[in-house]
Length: 241
Image (cartoon, rainbow, N blue to C red; front, top):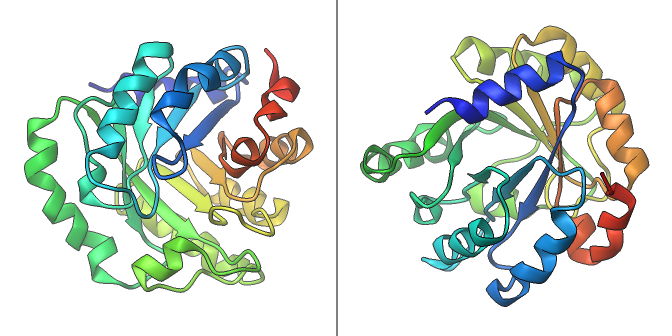
């Protein structure tokens, strides 16, 4: 199964930008999914990411099943832990936290995930995950026990992203973190994009249509929004097709 990644590769080449809505099972009620997807399905969203830093076991699967009842968009796991893996999803971002040096999040959790993934008929997309400081501590920092990369150290961010590509990652994800005070800035996005030959995802702290457009214009192939709609579901009115 390579349909999701193939689509991600082809869309930017035809100048079609991609928008993923990140749904955190810990913050989204199953009962609210039908109402929420009435809005999402009429927006410019192209992908649904599901996951969070801390999620009760089995909650992710219940949410994914409910989501797939109300949308034909690809539902992709964005897991904070092995317990969030479910074969009910369409695919998974197999995240390696390459901005940190905790072996659990570089390879340890991945070894734990093998038994689940080997039984799951879902598309696995190796993704280099780079956490960048945003002005506040994030859940990712606390749980992974790693520090984000400094915003002003663009050279190291670029080298880290390129190293991820050379290691075989199929996507690079620049992340400011959930509820970030500051989104990843244009300079970082554009300079990282210039050095890569693989698609670039940008998320964290993006709360307006203008910020989405800025990320696209700087080189993001996929923009991820989460907090924006958690705080204001009417945000989708700005993102009508």
